[in-house]
Amino acid sequence: MRLASLRHSTPFRLALTFGVLFIVTFIVSGAIMYHMLSAGLARQMDASLHETNSVIASTYAPDDMEDLVATLNSYVNLQTTKDGLYSLVDPKGVRLAGNFTAIRMRPGIYTIKPEDIGLPGSGRFRIEVTQLGPNMLVVGESFSDMDDLLRIVLVSLGWAAVLVVVAALGGGIFLAARAQHRLDAVARTMLDVSNGRLDSRIPLQGRSDDLDRVGMQINSALDRLSGMVEGMRQVSADIAHELKTPLNRLKMTLDDAIRGAARGRDVGQLLADARAESNQINATFEALLRISQIEAGARRQRFQNVDLTEILTFVEEVYASVAEDNGQALNLLPSPIAAFQVQGDKELLTQMVVNLVENAINHCPPGTRIDMSLVSAHAEIVLRVADNGPGVPAEERDKVFRRLYRLDKSRTTPGSGLGLSLVRAIADLHSAHIGLADNAPGLAVTVSFQSV
Image 1 (tube, rainbow, N blue to C red):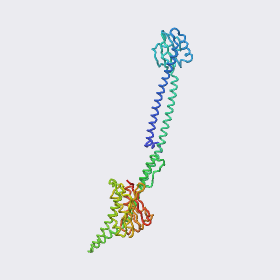
Image 2: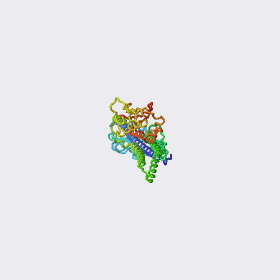
Image 3: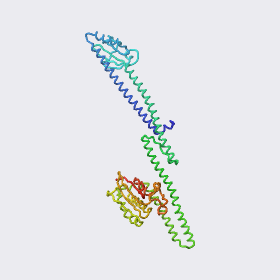
Image 4: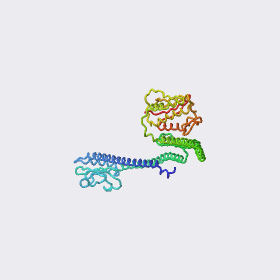
């Protein structure tokens, strides 16, 4: 990625911002450290200066100046005027000892330059002035050692600042480039999806970081989108295939009615057939619309605690006689638990159970036993509708939930192929898992809910 494009990216700006903050923090911290070190060295110098001055002054006696002069001269012999200043002058300003002649000053501690006392050179001195009887003692130390140390510290901080700047900018660019590379992968994936390549997915690094989590969420959304688009394509194809025949029958019936009316024949039965065919087509579209509404999740606001036992009891009361008329037996198996509570829409859950029971009644021969049951297992409530009829082949079990899909052996029976699609939509709305299994013989449909 070119730097010109990288500098406009959010990761680079964030990295640059944190880099600048880090650099500013380092400079402020260095300045504070430098100031504290300078103040500490100054205090140490004052303490050393005061100690030297006290040692020299302790040799003074009003009637004996020899010890003071000897001590002062010994210090002068050990240092030059570049390193230390020593002076003892009488009231008339005449130097009695030392390496320079001090001017009259009040007792105290001062910072002076060499030119202030008539000496050549540059730099600074810290001096302490003490009155010893009529005489004045001046003791001074050069700032050169402290300045050299502070200069070394300052240069070190400068080089460290340079390294920090290089590391912050270089590291920021490197990290921003890596983050931007992953964001570019997201952008490329979304561009592929917008161009119709719905199988494109965001590559994951396997680090479980925030970008990986976002990538997984987007991939999951793309999986759902791909499934929905594929479902829409399949529905469109199924609608075109399944409704072509009834629409052709409706057209042929209306054409016969028109020709019959033109010849003066009674066309009442033909119109009744046309109306029945139209009602069937309308019912199919209403079922498709109902499934779409359920999948949109609009009914979640009506969720409340629902007892599945009450629903199965109601379905048994209503459909037991229907199954009996069809030569079949519908039974609700007893359960040791009195109530099975789930969060859901009671009307939709009743519709789901009714569809499962009607599906078994319509597609099973006389003599079939249909059992409904509820069990609790692993914090789940499992609703089961099983029969001992012909069952569904294993390779067809995933397909029967598709809209308008019907098994070849079921095409002669009434229905539109939307019953199990509605069951799947209701189960998904309730975050329930639906599965088909072999009942040996027959089919067992299970719907697993999270218990309240």
